Every structure is written in structure tokens, then in C-alpha cells.
Amino acid sequence: MALIFYTILLFIPVSFINGLPYSKPYDVKEFTSARIVGGKPAPDGFAPHMVALVVGDLFRILVCGGSIVSKSHVLTAAHCIEAVMIWDHGDIHATPELLPSLRGIVGTNEYTANLYKNQVMFSNYTIHPEYQPYTIKNDVGLLITTKNIRFNDKIGVIPLKRKWVDGGEKSYVAGWGTDENFVTPVHLQYLHITTLTDDECIAGVHQATELLGPAPHIDPAVEICALLTQGHGMCFVSSFTVG
Image 1 (cartoon, rainbow, N blue to C red):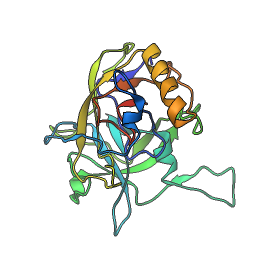
Image 2: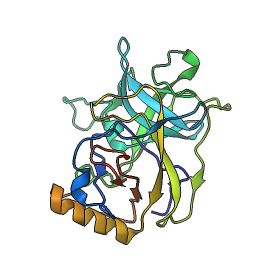
Image 3: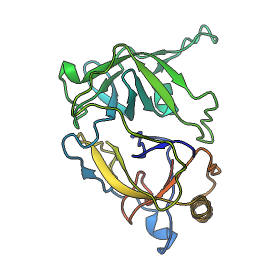
Image 4: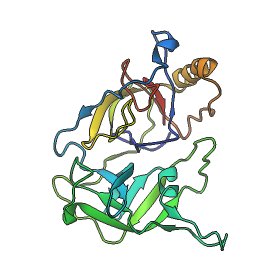
């Protein structure tokens, strides 16, 4: 894809992530059981761009992760925004509003932090006009904050990389994730990844679908692939992930 970040964004927990096992040099069957994602707790201030998107007043529920891209914009997945919309079933033409309890937790690795200074509210949103939920393409959107985010050593914008990303590039993913018991860790997790070429990605998905069944096609123009070590990844059959 023509534009990605130095850190590949991980919007988790994600229900629709297209993660499939990659069998090089392992046999694909080794990756079909549920396993712990395998991330490590992130050090304090490790990812100042990270935002935990939560809802709920009495009980806080983590919806997704996001990244600060400007003083007033948080980038996240389109399906994450859809999950926090209020639909007016009486008016099909009305623009859905965001849940009033939606807020972003910034400047901390703990999404349960209750300090007012760590909370960001949102007034509006925009979703990629070519978002395709059934094929998981262009799954990206922006949340617009009610006030400008104040930056410091633990709150900041994610660096952008504007060059083509090929295979073999080292990066990392960060997020709160879900382990094999469907438990979301309170502390931010991270792990290192290596990107794959388009051909490696397509070949890996093809082999995985022979075992696991059909999956959406790969579009190198809007997607990248990542390879991780065995037992590590961003989904339950993890090691090879498309996002």
C-alpha cells in the first residue's frame, strides 16, 4: 500500500481481522489451535500514539485501539466505529451518531485509567467511502475529537511513512488484544513483526484457505502482510496476518 505507518496499526480487539496461519517452514496444521497472542507488556511511554477506545459509564468496555494522527483525529478501523454508532431506525437517511459514552484513553498503557487528563471525547467521525465490510477492504476511519489533544512525552502523533512498504521490513504492532481465553489484558501489549512481499502473502493465504476454508481475496494496493514467529500474532490462528 502507498501509505502506512512506521508502526503497523493494530486495532484490537478486532472481530473481523483476516489472520491466517503461514506455513513456512512449518506445516500449516501446527497453527490451527487457539493460542496466546504472545505479546509483551509495553514499557511506559512505548507507544504515545496509542488510544484505547472504550464505552460505558458504570462499567468500562474496551472496543478497539486507535492511533493519534493529529491534534484532533484518531485513526481506527471502520468496523470499530460502526460498533459504537447509534442508528435511527425511524429515519434510514439519518447519519448515525456516536455513543455518548465513547471516549479515548491516552497517555497510559492501562485502558482502565480513570484520570480525567487521560480521556478524550469525540464529536464526529468519517469512514473510508470504499469500506467493504464483507471483504474487509479499506477498513479504516477517523474519529474527530471535541477538543485538541494536548501532547507531551506520553501523548503524541504516530510517525507516517509515505513510501511503498515491501517485504522484509521490521516493525511492531501494539494493542490490548485478546488471549486464548478471550481475556483482554489491561496493560498495552506489543510484538515485533516482519512484512511479507505481495507474492508471499498471496501464496500464504492460498495455502491457509485450503485448510481453513474461503477467505477474502488479497489486494496488495490496500493491504499488507506480516509474518511472526510460531505462537505469536494478532489472532487465534496466528503467525501470518493480513491487515
